[in-house]
Image (cartoon, rainbow, N blue to C red; front, side):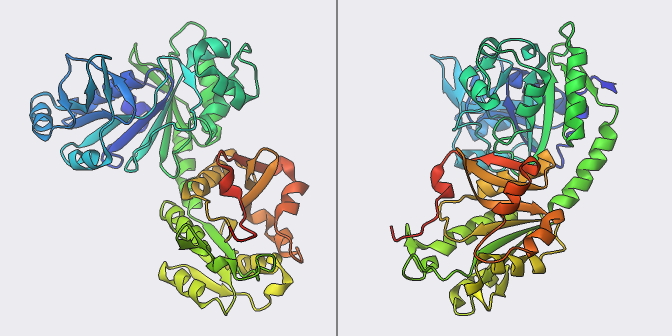
Length: 448
């Protein structure tokens, strides 16, 4: 299917998704202005900003530092405005504060945000601090340039060492179609920080001779992974959608329904023998250890529609039971915690056996974040594997996710063992999420 509308090609309904963030390679600014043109032609008031930096274009309507009066005047006169801080010496505009973004959001129908930088290179893998996705973003669009395919990483990638490290290649090696697919799909690359938001992909510069077929091939592979993708040329204003795009949208809808059937099971029934006291009540950075994990689970569940939290604990841990109930979680009692972690896992699993997948986490990882929990599930969904776990270096850790097909084997585990033996048994069916902060995987087994 061919169209001259980028909004149609990317299947973007701004009434449903009014805040859009654009990440990835070169072409982000062009994409933002192309969307702005279509939106203003349809009568929408559009605000353009950045959470990083953009080039300053003095000929365009601009509201320095998000000045409310300037925004209102520009929207009335032009239908759109750029709102950002200004560094005129460097010809750059920069990010506004969170408070200012929230203040000006109500003035426009749609907000378009450039949330990443690539210095015009067609491809990138983000550094640890990138991208900068505003928390109120509804939909993320990733841009990848087809002129990168078949060329050495060092020539066509922003921070080529990051791309090479991610792909396990040298910077002199050439990029393949498989590399582009991997970068687009991974939550460590262009899907980083997407979390539970809607995700679209634009394969740009497909008008270059010989690249249209390459783009179509990549698009077909991405559609198979339930990613909505368009390819074409922002310069020529011509875009294509896979013939199976409608089927893809149906599959996305089906997967959206499936995504909500996740049980997040927190195991909190241990006796803390090595710790010397009940470590779950131990204060870590001013908060009881179990509270850190429970609150991050709550944040993650809030972004996973209809997902539910199950807490397995001991009857004598009344505070944990009450805390679980306060956030609407199901609190289950393990009457024989001495039987080991497998018994708690199975009690939680028995209650959640109607879920499509279960995420298990322990209660002594106080630095685990909601972002990691969500990223793990996104990786599990996108790679269509039966299991997922976190990893740093050679060490795997919690949380871990298991699809329904492994429930029977989980119910057969005995003693103080968890599901890692099943992960080791079927390594080809595991998605691994690399963790950059080693503290997230740290169990607190002795007082700090």
